[in-house]
Length: 220
Image (tube, rainbow, N blue to C red; front, side, top):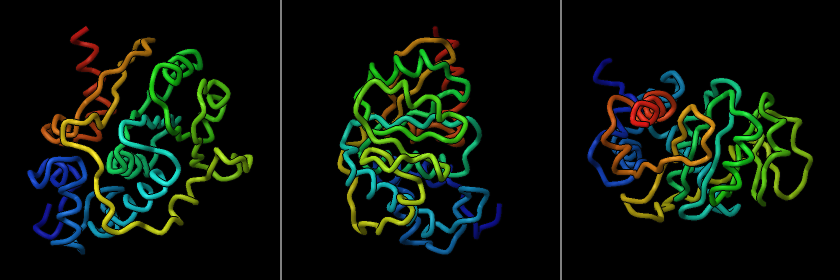
């Protein structure tokens, strides 16, 4: 890594501010042209922050409030997953990256057991939508799946949103940022605060999807 590049993990682990995106905001202001390391290093800090802010703006305008849970149920690795996760937390929501092979029964139980505001699905998890047990927004990562109903949107719509520049983080550093589920069939997750996530090394978002679940499994 050269002095002209900064990974996303460096941004999230720095001590600027107290919430998950605060250091990304600082990097976008101080070093806008440096590469962020997100999505294979293709985006500058400023570009990444702009995309995070677009998605966060859309989420807030469509009912994701402080403490509302947003589930990411993807059947394969999504290049946008990290950006979406950051956006959810900046909007004040609590994001959960679900196991790729999650069963319909468990998914249904999780939607029933949390304060669900929004679900992100892709082509491989489209079958899960019928198991949502509460009124919420569904965002489709792939085009052609939305029925046009008021509670459905395609991801391209989020990226086309005009970012609300200056949009503040509406919570506190001790607010929940992630809801982590292990690999069992339990519908009970564990919440991780912004502060706790910022102390993870080397990369908070990747750890949430792997080592964090492993840690929960070991403890149980």
